Image 1 (cartoon, rainbow, N blue to C red):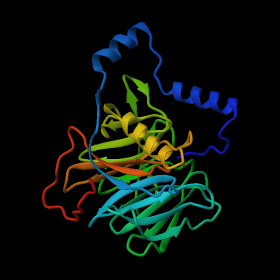
Image 2: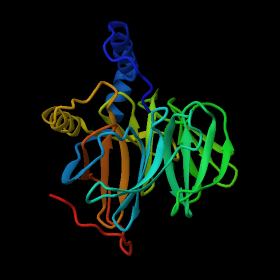
Image 3: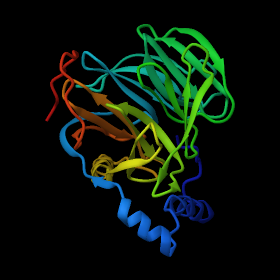
Length: 294
């Protein structure tokens, strides 16, 4: 997600600062003691490989689909779409624009051979054949669309609030709603999502944090601090003469089961990072290996 256009006005920057600060739960004497006692661990990803990423890709969704390939969705009106990408080279193998040209594309998730692609404020989700990217259906929904993943049976969607929505992939109807909290406080601006081994990982918009969420309770069980990745991506972009802008934030999480790793990137970042994270395990019997570029 990333909806801003102006990049230099003081009021906008103050607004962004206020939004970022609003992500920090307010503390009172009682909540401070409670939160300190139950604070989730802060984890630092360990980079194992780096891959090229298209600087024009305003990443809104990311999923590893095996055989060394990714499905990625991009945003911005007139630039939104879904693409198949070779991880090792960053080469776009196939792409299609978001079917409604005026729509701002958001997350994507592949389930049972269908790539579901949502939109920000258009209220339409598209079903695309995952192999051909040809549209095979569409659904209407209420509210905004931000991130999308699945748990093997149902789609899970975010709308920029502190809520996650489970949706029936056949009808896109909401079957369950869950509020996400940390220390009893709401975690707002949930963005790109990935379901990994019983947890939902969520980028939090305008921050360097990824929440690991228990889908049974909505509680954050750990935070991933990706500050170092943001700093490296920013330095790489600056050296290339194309600095990141304020809305080129971390966004994009994909699980590689055969290596037990995560792929992390951001909007218009030059790099996809492959990382190891405590608690994420290799899943045996999976296929689709690719050799990383060190």
